[in-house]
Image (cartoon, rainbow, N blue to C red):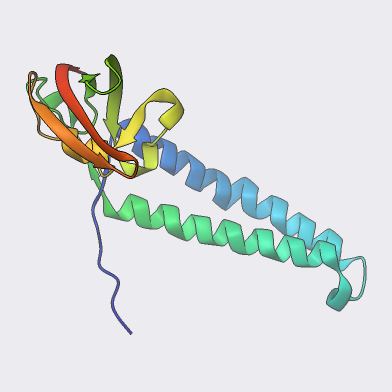
Length: 161
């Protein structure tokens, strides 16, 4: 059996706090709710053909899996002290305004850890193709990004927190 390689997860203080909140909710409310569902489903009788019981057990397994996943993320987290990061270079937590030469338009992204990704709000992972290309670049840097749909030529216009 191969030993799983631990990989650092970079989080801001606010992301860590949100993960701890989710973990607490799952350990308290989530477990209580699913235990109640199992108790009610058991009262229906024969467990072999009890769809409610099967569903409650699946939900219990999901919650326990999520608890393990979040505990692992928290354990492996490396907290980013945003106050020590400069606006001279793109880092996790940076807001980056870029010019997309292909679309002839500007976009702004925030570089975040994988747990904070929110494409609808332009929060992209530093591990994504565009995020990785932005990381450690400076204002004025031009670069090309390989994405599944082809390539994108970009230039960094500004960096801020």
